[in-house]
Image (cartoon, rainbow, N blue to C red):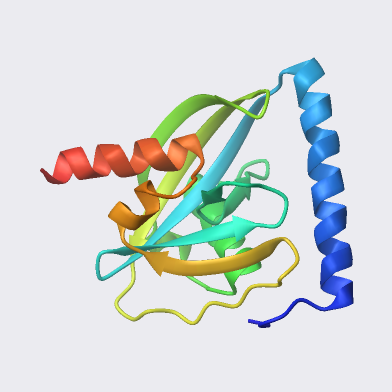
Length: 161
């Protein structure tokens, strides 16, 4: 994981920011219904979260599902793309489903989760993803996070008592 972004990385970050702003403008008019998948990777009570270059909130690795792709398959694919962590989708189980109004769209989102025995090495591109690390749920709830991540963590906390 590069400590300092290069000029090329900064160019990509700017392109992501511009593209995301254009999408938000489009969404503000069209109000689409989108489907996404995030993956919650747990290790010893801590959760892997990421910060994308184009968004203010922290989130989990994830993105849109490809046609015919399960939530677990999408989560494993996105985890590999965003953090260079490779997991077999069969290890990942469904954990949450919610629909939120977010960024001018109706965001229908699934979160799948997996517990890993060893803390994986994280590799980010410093372009789409600019930061990734494991944090406690309490620390994450104190951060600026996307609404579905907040709801997932609050539900999980309530279920665990």
